[in-house]
Length: 506
Ligand code: NAP
Image (cartoon, rainbow, N blue to C red; front, side, top):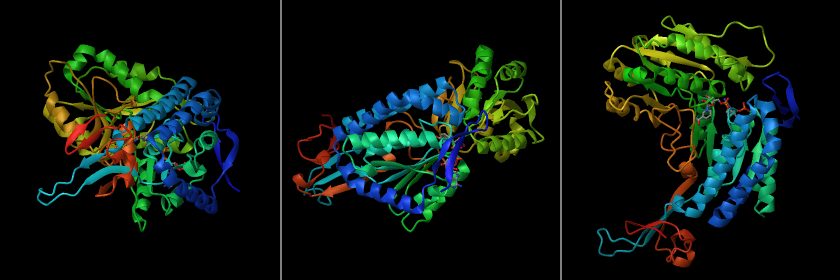
């Protein structure tokens, strides 16, 4: 049986003995178990569903000390970062549990019968119900938070859907450990074993997307992989929703007034943000629009030079980074502000940061090549001559996860115009900050218009991520005893509901 073997990016050495590829027969069995579990999970009350989520959070916190060294070995990411990521992941599971108990996620709406309305209205009661087994593709760059027990899993379980995770080849042993932990929690709570499982091997991803038992997919990863799998989901005889969260360029704009007030601080914040996690963040600021004559080249060069090289997550990520930096630096209009000195070959996949620059005029005339995400420690400064040139350049941007503006309270630039251009392009607009932190909260939006996602209507981070795994159903004139508890007279679950157009809190 062939296996998926993780490798330490720092040394290139294999980690562990590998995890067997999932055979087509095993995939069938795993999806059949998920299908069998679906009605039971859908019928779980909020208290039991919340118990599952908090049980997973508790188990992850307890196992964190053991799991972090394995994650370090498979991803090359540092201990503090991974310890923080475990805490973020268990927090996310617990936040979902509180949201399940609060109850507004099912969007219960009751319209009383009104025979005098035109047309006459029967008793109508609408809510969101779980869509069925969800396939979750994990990403390499967040081995906890966007992986086995990460955001897509937490939101799908909160919605009442069984989960099948497609393991990332960058951390197969960690996936297997987290899966075993989750399956123990499921078993201890007396839930069906099909509630949660994982599949391994690159072939199992497309096979699972096309499996009739899978009802929706969540994907975090590259634009190319996401698009290929999205197409498969749509080519099924019964197309299913595919929520792909893909690569992003995250433009950041700095006004001349902001440079004058705090240029040094902005330079340090920028370099810190685009090199964080060795640039392997989907929210990395990949473009920085600076006024021409900003005078920051020297300081930026110094700051970039102070950043140590670090291993890239996988060989594939490293190869794509080299190609991406090479093709950016080769464009005739691009100049190099900072580039790593050639260093003797090191085992593993180490990379040091680069910073490139071009003019807004050149960027605008070569926008497709100069606005591709290059995943890793590189960013492009785009120098604008006038507010008009800046706004025209920004209007050429495609969809991104974030856009950031650095400006002053009284600013010479028309900042309202900038925001009006940017908020049509992104899911999150940031004022005087940096995009790399993504808080897990009710108000978070992590998504955006094409090409950054395959569906701009939803988020993959935050409580409303559950909306992707829920489907609306209206019950018309159904007797009270046969209605789901969320819609019954007397509101037995004590949840917020809209009754005859008015929001009614419990
Ligand atoms: P990736 O290489 O696309 O891998 C993601 C998953 O998709 C893996 O399970 C991989 O399987 C599978 N896959 C990729 N291409 C495939 C194909 N053609 N056919 C079948 N399966 C395929 O991405 P990554 O290296 O994990 O992550 C890097 C990218 O993710 C960056 O572009 C980053 O910006 C993006 N990202 C986005 C977000 C967001 O929220 N928008 C968050 C984090 C990362 P194998 O592992 O088996 O090959």
